Amino acid sequence: MERTLDGAVAVVTGGARGIGFALALGLAARGARVVIADLAGAAAAAARLHETGAAAVGIDVDVTSPDDTAAMAAAAESAFGGLDILVNNAGIYSTLTPRPFEAIDPAEWRRVMEVNTLGPFLCCRAALDPMRRRGGGRIVNISSGVAFKGNPFMAHYVASKGAVVSLTRALATELGRFGILVNSVAPGFTLSDGVLDNPVLVEGVKDASLRTRVLPRDMHPADLVGAVCFFAGPDAAFITGQTLVVDGGAYFH
Ligand SMILES: NC(=O)c1ccc[n+]([C@@H]2O[C@H](COP(=O)([O-])OP(=O)(O)OC[C@H]3O[C@@H](n4cnc5c(N)ncnc54)[C@H](O)[C@@H]3O)[C@@H](O)[C@H]2O)c1
Image (tube, rainbow, N blue to C red; front, side, top):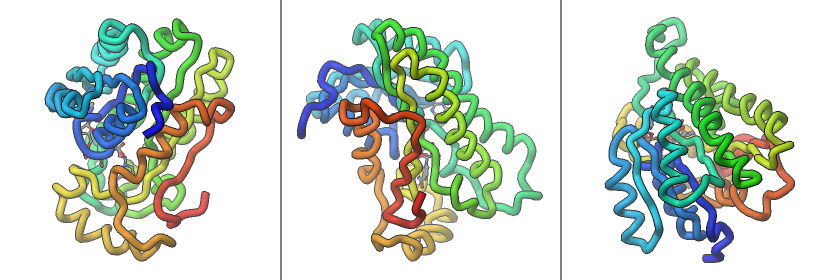
């Protein structure tokens, strides 16, 4: 593996499992030192990264908390001397039950919006000064292909991931002058740990998604590593404000 991220410090939110853990592993394999920030299991996930020879720390963070997200950025600076890459991956999806939009509880709508949109906002805000101190940085926001397809029965989730695409564009515009590049990756239906724990999703979506793909196989967290590491690395030095759909060719963006 080419060590394109040697010396960089990366924070991955929701990195304790699922897509986030695969991204943490991929960033570390390319030489990044990694801070795993998660509601639960961050220290254990960092220990698993250590076993691969990576430099990693774990920190308990709720991305909807201004204090926690500030502590997250401070932890990157104190553990590794700076912050270069922020991957906004933490999100609510796999625990949701699909239902018609009129049956969505407003409290659930608020919580989805909080985690999936306030969370990335707070994490970007916390990363701003550390990245400016480094003279630049990379932010990669995990959106979803549903933002483009408008999938039914998860209107709050679909709306939240559309907001992530728009936030990516707005922040790219604001932060370019600081050398901070902001891009987004929009995954298709991925057999993450959380998804595999939810039989309703697996039974309801897995085969239907597969049938929409040009590349007809299941999608796994590792399928997202290349796109995220590309946006985080030297080959993407003149790319900002973009969203790359990674879904086996189900949607042509
Ligand atoms: N799995 C899919 O099919 C799919 C498709 C498109 C986009 N995504 C997006 O990818 C990201 C990861 O999804 P996944 O399927 O790997 O999920 P997952 O459920 O397997 O893991 C999510 C992780 O995020 C953490 N998390 C949740 N809320 C948090 C909070 N408030 N603060 C900090 N951490 C929090 C969880 O503890 C967990 O470790 C999400 O943003 C999701 O919306 C997933």
